[in-house]
Length: 256
Length: 330
Image (cartoon, rainbow over all chains, first blue to last red):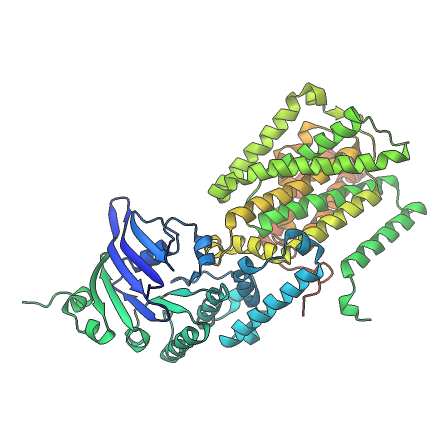
């Protein structure tokens, strides 16, 4: 079976700085894969390369058998890849429900003409978008926040809102950049359950960056470890946990 | 009948029309005041359309009156030089309206072209580019002899009246509002809020930035055409940088991103500016102090400084009055 996402020899330079080097990865459909590594090891850069924020120096990114390298970010979203951000990027002055509705933008078909005249076709589409947005908010336990201005929501809810927004684009693959950052242990538990649920209910494949070992070991089926842009280990969570190169990258070399 | 579902904005505008007409017919309202109301309504068009670019889409245009100038000169040339329309002929109304729309369309095309630098530039840099474009447009008018050069285009027939201007302002606000309250408008709002995130939820940010400039310029062109046919003149200095800043001040005073704010500020500041002119003259007469009408600009500027100091989000912030908003779909 062809993998959903297949990355080959991905390499990226920022000027003379090598941020990612010869990164290879295959993610099968329906899985939850993790990417870990120390700070500054190039994890977010890989996400930015997949989503078209940066144009890779070298390599190929195939999504469902199609090369998406060099494609504009919004087109990559249309192909079915959504993401969240390490530092939240919420539409702060808009309501929670509008944050979701914007993510449904590219699937709406009402023309400018129909929208400006508010024709019945426009109104029925708006109704459908609103209903779906409310359903997503409900799933994220945010339905009582629908009309609230997003920037007034507490941090944990913003994280969930961002995941809901990514899901609203109807992705096949969702990239989560440190979804558990800044969450307390209970919230982390809820988040893990949520991620598993998303995979099962929305049939999305999950690729996540995380520092929380609890999350990584708890839900990831396969883990890739990078340091200075290079892969240093890969495998099942238990195996990676005890890999000497991983321990070295995180904790430093054992004194001799 | 469900009161919530009544077309509130339409009712408000019709009431406004009736009140002004009745006051004018009974001569409570003189021609001068009606003129100020007409000017205010033209500023409503200018401010709400600039708000679409600056407030809703989060771009920064400093050349808005340049677009108005295009509309004024194109429609003015059509009615005055080419079609040679006369106000006394009732059949001239339709060609006049078509000329105004033609001015808007040409302005929209210029806006479309100017929208392109906005794809690569942000904030201050974009402001400088749009300022440059505005000045280029002004300089072009200044140097075309066929439209009067530095003397301006004179003898434009006075087709603009209260009814025409009010309908134009009403349609502008309704179209921009309906745009904002649609998927297209939400795409524009998302660019203002966070351009990268907008792109990464599938919004074609390029397309919507150019669209905002095109729409904004179209309405500015309409406003420019109406202005030229109200004051019977199109002059290069009317469409310079300082005039663009005046409109910019209106949207900041009213609240960036609020159509209600732009409407209130367009009326408020136009009347304030005229009121100060009269007020200062009366003060000079009464006290014998050597102060001229131009001192109103000092008071005006001070008021703006105080608005920014004590209410820097403007009168309305990003809020919208319920009179303006559409009824949300169920």
